[in-house]
Image 1 (cartoon, rainbow, N blue to C red):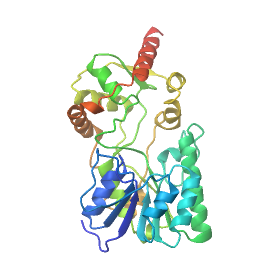
Image 2: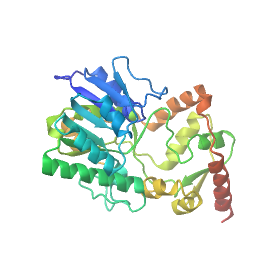
Image 3: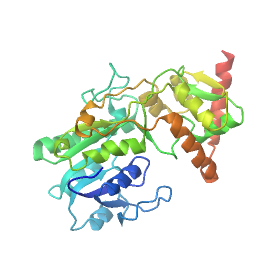
Image 4: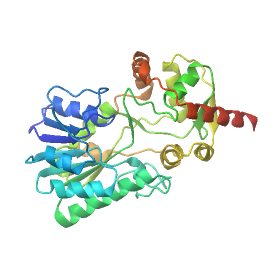
Length: 334
């Protein structure tokens, strides 16, 4: 597929789980791509055609120096997580950009949802997770800037997006190590809630399709696929890819896990604990080629191949491991 008008696109970030595939697709479609980040990632190398600018995105002076005298058709902001940062971007890019695309989060939606499927008009409210509330506040800055000053913002809400390096389960590689050792693996709830998983390559099709699209300016789009397996299926697919035929899955209430693991709790109760299904008709109206082409049963095989080839990434979290032992033992005793 080709584009009619190549754009000058700045990715702030660009080498992360979500952004790297979008950079690659933008280059492949003929956009002139610049990436601004710290330049420290070797896991996802950038295409040779990309211009790189090195700066810590949290250092305003360094970013301003790197971008001095530069205008862009599109700025894609993947690394802003608080409203102050976004407000500074509005000042920095006003009059210098044709479209500013902010990466928000589907976790900003009402949690738990009052009705499904979730659409862009679903209310934004997450009482469990500060990360989500901060994203909502960032969106508020952009909505005001668009309404009051015609700042050309587009808001994008991805859901759980992964690549070969990001395992979707609560314990990540710790879960895989436990499976391969024949030890029980803790699954939140009863394992039957449905969870939308989107491969980063599929996300990239929708995201890049919005870049420079005049109908996307001043609007909000969610980008995720239609693949929504139950959590038990996710764990079993991961186990099969890891060479484990019958993993022992122990179901533990999400609230119990949250109490035992305070660092995990907000993201669990504020996101993964609830069935989340989405309707992306609004996105497909502008980007008809968007859809689900990679499902997790396929992707789990790719992930295990990558981890087995990168032993340095096979890190067991000892704190999580001990907590899972306690949670599994308690669940078995009741």
